[in-house]
Image 1: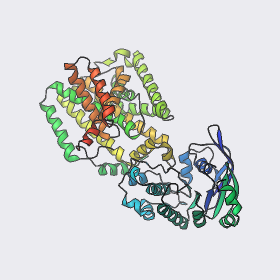
Image 2: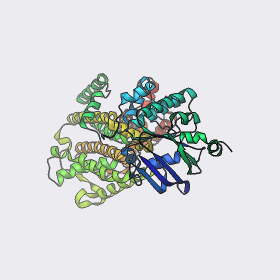
Image 3: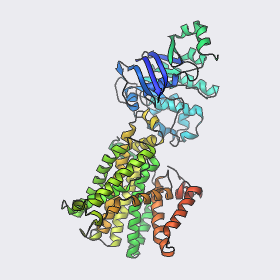
Image 4: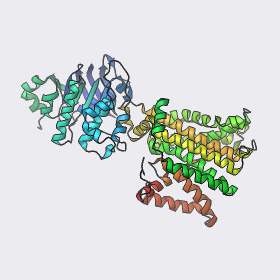
Length: 235
Length: 321
């Protein structure tokens, strides 16, 4: 479904990615892991062209290159994106936020309705007339995921979905990711919580200093403690 | 961008307070009928400028696009109507539709350039486009009459009395404002607000930000064109100043005075600005000095303008958008 080969990307003249390789198959949940600042978010931003310049390599989605497309064109191809900072439209209500996405009518897409995302996140239904800007971080995260689902993605990119959330709320987000996995939604999740990786992921890509340094199955990842020690623990 | 059924549903859904609006319009109409002609003319100008300010407000409050050249589309509306009568020989009644369409076409051409940039660079492009428009109107003597404009080509107000034309303008503006309100509340309006708040995020939800902004620009130009056309009919004349920087600044002041981030802000701003500019000069010669102090006070003490004040006093339940 998604194939990234030798990706290079930069903010202005500062190169932040210098050799990222990632693949994700249909229905698969792939976790990107690594310390803070190694390039996980930049990799996701490169896929959707979110304020970063891709300077080399290839990003193929369903066999077609995403290079040269504008962000909204990438989304319409079937890539949903939930950024790290959520970025809900603060002055719009929850319901209005959910009406903003432009769904793509295509037969090969799972088409989500507002009622379906309310079923996935019941709190959003309770607060549907509330301004998004006054909701808690966890509720904003749910709104951000719900909103991305309404673009009818084939592949969902979740950047640090637990960042800054209380453990109980983070658990609800993990439950939502598992529910989406059961629905067959392919996901790439940037993640640091090892427990979440064990519960959700099918495969793991470890990123360090802007490049992929290890890729394999979840079992393979846990079988080799050296990976965690070398690339995740604070030196 | 949005289908007619969705737009109609938005009109039906739009929370218009008819119990307040209809008596208000009827009250203004009554004043118009029994007041002297000068009051009717003032009412007409207030209504026209309210529509003009509301069209700019669509860009500023909802699209977060500050235009320093919105008068260009007021001027294009006025000249579009006038040239359709003078050069194309259309009857004035038929030419009424030409003005707004010319303004929308101008908005489409200039807007396509302006939305390529954002923030201050967007604002400077709007200014540049307006200056080009103004200069063409000012210099192209053979077509536009140059700095002396075009006068005497029709009976002012289509031959109607001051009160009669005030009624026409009032109800036209009321309908146009309702249409603008329905657009703000429609799915397209949501897109405009979303792109205005966070362009990158809106694109990450599948919206073509430039296309949405261009659509907003054309809509705002169209409604500014209606205002310009009504103004040209009122005076039976057009001048390059209708597209000048002065009128843009007036509209910007109206929007800030009335209150940013509120649909009613532009309308209230136009009412207050026109009343101030009619009354204050009778008592104080340096009326711009008073205006300067009023603006200082608004910006420092009431950044949400008159609508914010109403909200604070509990007179406006929905002070924001």
